[in-house]
Length: 230
Image 1: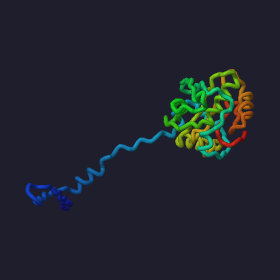
Image 2 (image 1 turned 30 degrees about the vertical axis):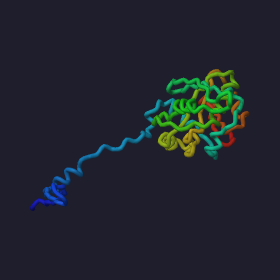
Image 3 (image 1 turned 90 degrees about the vertical axis):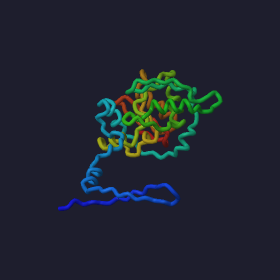
Image 4 (image 1 turned 45 degrees about the vertical axis):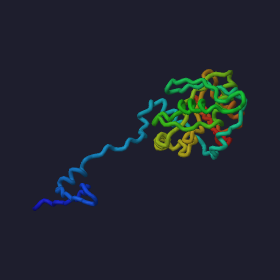
């Protein structure tokens, strides 16, 4: 069978006014196949495999059976001061990163640079992506910190990307598919030397958002959603 030939016309400009020259290049079907068979690099996408996390970390995330909540980002961003001094001392459970930062000035104004630092510390552990953290959540963490003598708040889980939350939801029916962790509005925390039950009671007393109690896992979920307890 004769090979299939295709003629491709390539237009090239030539010399004087309006003059045009056409040249023909012969390409075989085999040539076209060789071009289409070349594999292009697949676009990179964040992994949704929980095996990338340590078993203890994945287990802590799976334990958080958050109840549904409704809240607007606008409301969460402008959370009221709850008695904290405007300074946060945070430590991330899994990275070991620490942060001490003033996020609210003496004049009551929030400091954007401080929010950026908190946002980075609370980034998704699976993908490394970050999400804005609202003032409402920082005020809750600050108030709890000051309630217990300014002790450092340990963050077990902050922002969760859709990939991480989806992987968790696939592994456990108890994980909220619309978790406020997805919007940067929640944090799972503990404070060294403070009983989990005492931390829960202090968080509930604020009446500032959701509070989840996980005594066997040793942490409390707090968020800037509507007031609710589980």
